[in-house]
Image 1: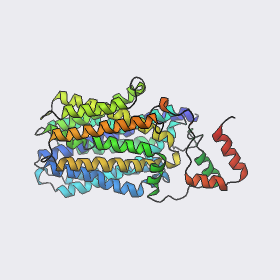
Image 2: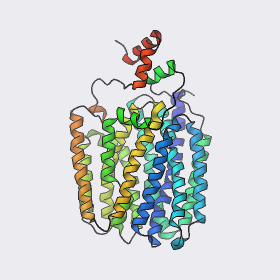
Image 3: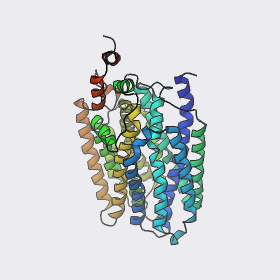
Image 4: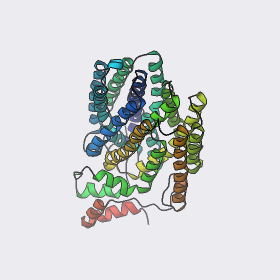
Length: 447
């Protein structure tokens, strides 16, 4: 079986396992948030726990995420799923409804999330290895990774609503435990993966130089992942920041609209997950024909409409879906471009740096939305979010016109030279003449 055939055989199982695990994690997270409110914990306390459950694991990933570039991606995922399953099951013994210790629940939840977050780089690394060296391949696999992770919100939102309405938190915990075990088993049964099996980064001169002249990748310090992300993807980083500043605090914002009916929070999460799938499919056909500007405007208009309602209805959930659809069209494009520009050897580090940036903004927004819910009106908060979306949409449009950023293949400059890191350039200059000539010939193509 050649690399392309093996890639096609492995990819469906790999993404199915991630989807199963993501559905379990999302169901538990949303159910825990809702059950805390139902058991008389305040929105501020629930949002604080939700925010810390993201911020603390993010700090750990910031320090250790680059390790995934040196560890076996397959073994890392298997070990992480096993440990997360044990921590998840332990939550059953500390949940006692209104008499529960918020700090004890928080400690176990945060430890569980640390393990889940740590394997994000390994997942992205395997996705990159499966992508090949074309923009279409990288775009397809980047969207499938988004669908398998964030797209699980469609199913987890519905399941969380069912657990909150008809079940118990203990049942949601057992479900979460089972999904960890199942994904660990799926990944264990996959064939061993290596970048030599799949076609990846054939024209990446940096990889070629470091492979031929160094032989072994140098040990990376923890902060270098941020330098790699910021220096080579500066404009994409700006778009990431803007997206999550305008849409951060998703669960707490939905809880504000839901009011005394926290079960609606699950439906808002489900709409978010549905948008991931719909945006992924339409981006390969209809929505890709348009620039990003209409989608930024769609986010702004959706927020303005949602801010006019004091309680949740199916119409508001529908408007929330439109907002999330516009968000995911933009996010899919950024993810595809980022994956295309990042070599396999840096995929874990860059993914970790990006995850840290995104989660810090999102988790901080959850805490802020919960804290100011009694002071700032929903209408004013929605108007601020809309203003940010419009402003950034216009800024991104100016970058596209200036050819400083390309979110679609049609916006790509006619000649795009692959980026080389400063380290790789120094290695190239000091490389033997024969190797240097080989690399330069491969990167330039036929004359």
